[in-house]
Length: 211
Image 1 (cartoon, one colour):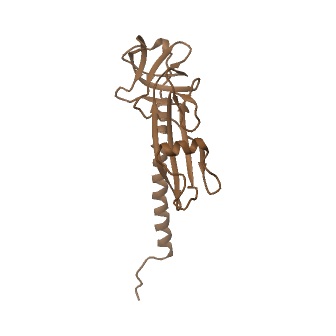
Image 2: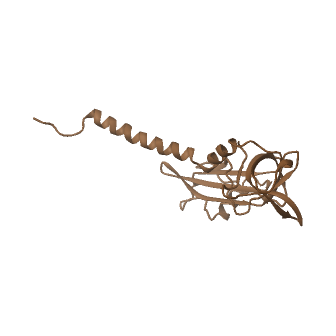
Image 3: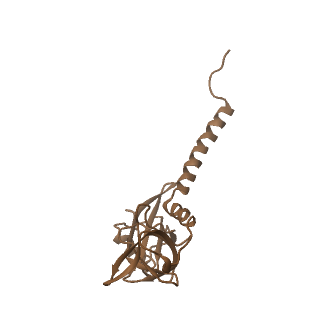
């Protein structure tokens, strides 16, 4: 009698096929993450001395961050030119992003031959975020973490009073940090003085601290 259906080998092939698709999607997500795309683009460019920059060209520079006006990074509390925060919560078996924010100001990059201005207001820079804290069953939020959570409109405990299982990630640009930055060279006015600046242009503004 003819038997219809999928045998054990068929189920194995189906399982491996599904796993292959899942792994491929995960790898694509990792490969196409903004911070990794930015790093690949920056690695493909040779750094130019700031002293050699001319308006109208696209260039990449490597140097130290010099702060102008400053922000305060939410979790670490350090003065910085830019910060990016992500808060994740575990629900069941999966992690979910509860909140993600960034804020930036203008700053200089100094490579020893000169300084170039970068205005990070309104841009999401592709920094690598580091885990800086978290909460769990026996790990309450610190006063600073609680302040950040409240500012993001997140209650650190459940309706039953248990601590939520959360992870906190942060990236920031602080004074003296070495970065690579690429953009179109132009002239901007900072504190009433003309300075060289990098702006997005057609290919965007790239700034990374982990090239």
